[in-house]
Image (cartoon, rainbow, N blue to C red; front, side):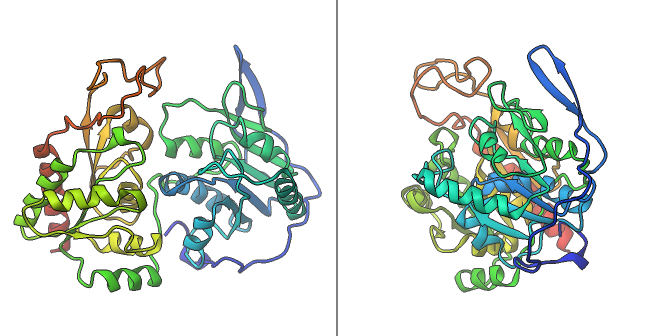
Length: 399
């Protein structure tokens, strides 16, 4: 759990608007270094009753924010934490113990995932409704702030804190957005600006009864289930089908049941892995909701995945996982613990097709348009070795 079990809440359990505090909290001290502006963290804010957190992203992004949300909950136990998110957040978090009390679904703005087409009038109505909420604090951990900070400033919160690139508007308390930083630590650094801290730097997600019930309808016994996830939104982060199949065959020969997961457009790669295997495997593509998939991963023996949502979800529910990583991405998304997590790393720094640099001015923006895998060189033996090691630890712990 993310906080004391005595404060397990469901959405809608605490209604009404917070009253504005009579004495505004002091802002942090500011200082400048060259063209950048920084703030010095201060003690927690006083009279803070309602917090808005802007984090309207996909699954992995939400999981990276969980420790920061936990820090807000631990520091402000009486405050209502309202996540400004997407429809999937509301469905997934409804009734789930955790630091978020309520989800408010954002309008489909162009700068949100999927590039929505909400009209100016829709945005204006939403902002008016949010001002009526009378937030004491608005937290921006959505990104660099070019679009999100102007939006956040229109919520009317008494205090604002968040990230900003050099060209983004500043909030009351601002943390510079520097691309290569652990995402988990990035958001913890933001909430520290309002005195929020936690010892829980590993994302932790509660698994609930409906997750488990749905997962058991698909896989009755998952004690020896290994889930392979060969998809990723960026084709360059995908380990080749044949290599996933080789790991699947080896673990199937060890006596494990192999399931291959995916969603939507990942269906063909799921079928390709199953087709390339010599031993039986089953497709889990689009078989479960996010909640059901959470339940399944919590019951599985191991997950082997590209650097994408299922790898991080496995870790958040305590299931051992091997992630296949391109080195620069490791900086941003890997957690510091290794008792249940391994990273099989590709050290490639040049395009496998044309040999152009894969980094441009220090960022993962290749000088070419090729989309071939940059993690193909990760050896099957490395991934398989990590998988067997984690399985031995898991079964040893269970014994």
